[in-house]
Amino acid sequence: MPAPAPAPAITERITARLEGRAVRPGETCWVRHIREATAADAAGPGPVVAPGRVLDALTLFDALLDFATADERVRLVWMNGSRVDPAAPRDAWMDFDIVYGVTDFAALTAPDNCGWIDAFGPRVIEQLPDAAAPGEPAPAGRFAWLLQFANGQRVDLTVYDLLRDGEAGVAARASAGLGGDSLTALLVDKDGLVSEPPTPHDGDYRVAPPTAWTWRASCNEFWWVTVYVAKALARSDWWYAADLIGNVLRAELLRQLTWRLVLERNDESFNPGKAHTRLYRLLSSEDRQLVWQTASLGSPAAVYDAFAAVLDAFRSVSQQLARLAGYEYPDFDRDVSAFLPGYIDAGRFWSR
Image (tube, rainbow, N blue to C red; front, side, top):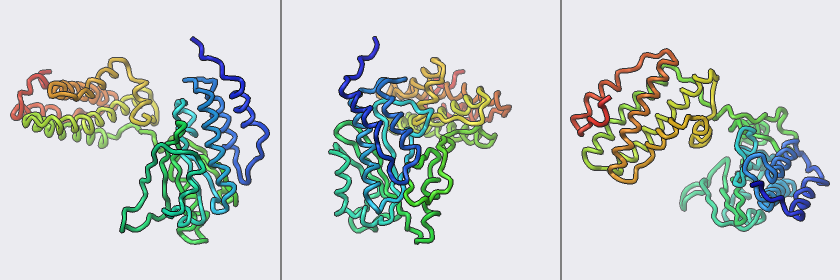
């Protein structure tokens, strides 16, 4: 069933926000691009976003830029993350990742002087990952507010100190800040500090084909930790076994699946996405099922089943990858499989 057409009044308000707007001092073409892409979310493609949420997103984005324009301490604004990644799926829940390059870092981050954050709207919850505990030194260089607003919008707002290395280092500090993430777009540069604005790309998030050494190291890590899991099962320590399966063995399986995909596609590299979401969309239904079978860890029996599943899956994928890359399959599988029955009745796991 087609999505209902946006209410005319909201559509008109979205259009009004896009048109007749004065360009802010130092504003780059990326501001218009982000605003137009956000407005287009109301019509697709992809999951249709409620027009009211689009209007809220535009309002927040404009408020962030308006504050930067009005406050002389803010000299640069840039954006990171999915909103500057053309390959990222768009939906109603995309965050804004904004960085202010500032000349009075201490004043803007002083705990008793952060009321300016309230201008962006009422919050449900916030997180201050850089806040100093009582008695500890204040952070230097950058400070972030992770903000969840009551209307559903979310922004990670970072203040970045342009003067940390002294006045002579402002341009260098700006360059270092913009170069910290390949998915970065310059939104505002009031002073022309950035001679060559970055072009956003996902290079920092792409995985290259494995070398023989990195592939062997992954296999070694997997089979090494397998011994820990078997010991945990022998002790009936289901919690520890489940933790190792979920956080180590499955991580190595996903690493190998990513490498296999790169080799199968003859790509130089591939961005598997946050929590391997892009990889998952490209896996076959059989491989998806294999991965899911390693994630059911809610009971002792399920932990055993997940262990069996991750062993089968890793063995299969790493052997496929060895053939694709022309690598010699290491002896870890054979040696560990022969060793583990001393800890548990492992016949169900190593019978193949």
